[in-house]
Image (cartoon, rainbow, N blue to C red; front, top):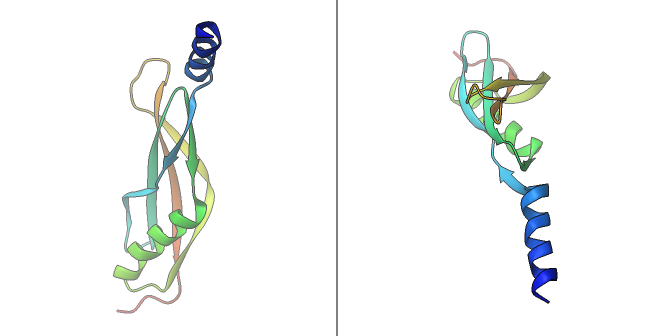
Length: 103
């Protein structure tokens, strides 16, 4: 019985685990109507991210700039944070503000 329990624990450690990640605003340009969102990705984790949550977060930032919404454009960019085998990365995605900006 101990062998089975130990095997299950070892498999969980080896295969990693799913982790919920939220997109957070890290920058952008009001003049260009672009919002940059990101989340951290660590080796051994399987990040679960919600595209809808990303759009809502970007739209909220765009709203403060006078736009009515946001939509993702392009893919994601990965940036190494730890410098050692990229075990810790930041995943970045850009969103375009939509709707006419209120002045």
